[in-house]
Amino acid sequence: MKEFPINIKPFGQRAVLVEWPNEVNESILNDILRFVDCFQQLGLPGWEMSIAYNSLTMVSAMEDIDFDLIAEQIKACHNEDGSQQLSKERYLWKIPVCYDAEFGLDLNETAQTLALSVDELIVQHTSFQYTVFGIGFLPGFMYLGGLPSKLEIPRRKEPRLHVARGSVGLAGKQTGIYPQDSPGGWNIIGSSPIPIFNPASEKPCFVSVGDKIQFTQISRAEYDLKRIEAEVGILRPEKHKLDA
Amino acid sequence: MLKILKSGFFTTVQDHGRFGFRSIGVPVSGVMDDDSSRIANQLLENQTDSAVLEITMTGPTLLFEASTYIALTGAFLSPTLNNEPIENYQVIKVNKGDILSYGKLQNGLRSYLAVKGGFKTQKVLGSYSQYYPVTMKKCLKDGESVDFEETLLFNPAISGLKIDSKATETVLKVHKGPEFELLSNEAKQKLFNTPFSISEKNNRMAYQLAELIEPHKNSILTSGTMPGTIQYTPAGRLIILMKDGQTTGGYPRILQLSSESIGVLSQKRFGDQISFELI
Image (cartoon, rainbow over all chains, first blue to last red; front, side):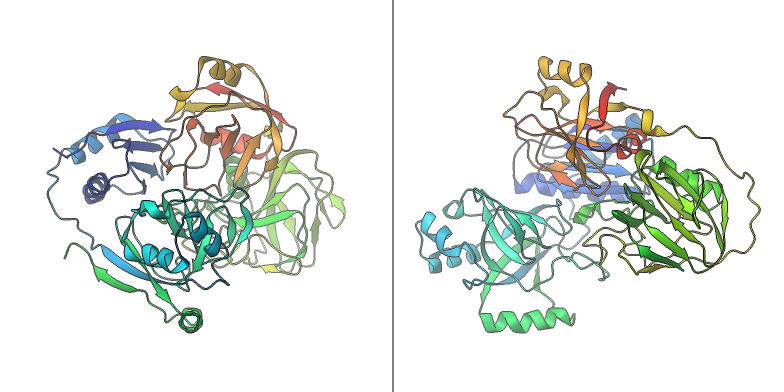
């Protein structure tokens, strides 16, 4: 038996929602990843899988699915031995961030609100490994968990109409990177030169759910250099195997 | 080649969308009105997922630089070929140098133009569908060209169809969504017994409804969404996600539109009325 109970719900004509207990918890995420591994090994074609925190949304390419049949297959996978290793490698990605005031539009104000110096804020932000609990909302947008409570700050009262791609922000219990130019209400503290989403690449998003992210501080000069490397396609983020 | 002399309000290349990238947050995209697009392709005996032009509200002016056959379906935008009126749901021969243009929107909102063999642009992540930032541009621009293969002769099995416009349909068929039970009895009453109208905020990502239902304080952990998911904001607003809609969201998902009803809704514009019926 798996560690946590699940709830299987129909979601329209072509999707099934599988829910784990309603909390943000790495053991639950691991359970979901093991479940996805098992389901994918059944070799059923045409399922899209979207993990977000405690849920898995499974969307079929077929118009009408047989919910009872698929629910049986889901239960069978859920009852599999939960101790086996995941088939996919997981990685810790080191993501460089330049915290210069030019990019960190809200850096000073955020540090003030949090009663930290700017340097302390940067040390806090770069000291932890954040777990990727989901990718969604925008292509390549990561839901990261594990932010220290010292960095929890409400969203901006007025969202910006334009936040630049690469911007790194803080909001509530979350930190993250804007993969595209978009409107947004997060407090912007820096910018990363790493393109998180690249549709021309064989793997358009190098990060997978279950991976971890750690930010590292770079200078403005390093940022400019890495931007050029990114533009010509030779910038690769540093990665380390997890579970090793 | 098809030369876009004038692009109109919002004209895009669309097929059935890109499948298999939900796990990295890529929306499915694809034609908003599946039935209309499928019929246009069927009339031309194309693969049903061949790429078509999706034309919204104000039509483009298009120059055919090669001969082919076309079919127009969906909304009726008073189309003309070389200034002669033409009808929807017919197989029509066009010659090199012909100009297709559109006039007044008579019904619906989205019209489809299919050519024999389908349009051929650059596929991105397995699909021709335009969706920025997966594709470089969000829609076609004046002066651009879209490729298709020339067809000089084609004998269609059927030359045309008499199809009633979906523009008169106002009932959207819905399944209960994962958080349906968060609705109070009063909210359910209002949801199924009163009409709603389309707000000015409607596009390929989402349709917002103008009328609010009861406000609420429920929140959920961010979870999966898809085209047809109806989100219920704390203010009581209903947001219906469409083909370019986000893959995850944090609002309760109270209803899920049937696939057919996504097509019906996609032909509605600002001010039109709809109502919901549980399947």
